Image (cartoon, rainbow, N blue to C red; front, top):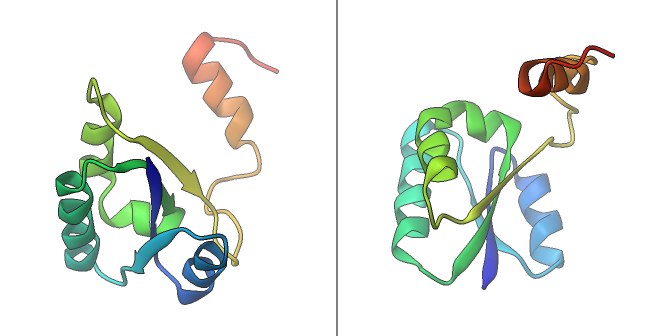
Length: 102
């Protein structure tokens, strides 16, 4: 099993390549969809790492993968510009998931 990154910037891709993770830079929705098709065909890919900005291009398609029974693990990361999520993201997530307000 191996990992694959879909990044919106070259810096994140280079960092992952240094760690031995292959991937692609996708600046458009079409490029991201093309890389997703590659991932679906390669059964050896077990982890998909995707930056937040690249996830914005193909969020619906990635949600389908996440909901699949035997799908690769999807890990969303922030890029060098920081997170696009608000500072209270985890608190909102917990409230939506389990109804706990902190």
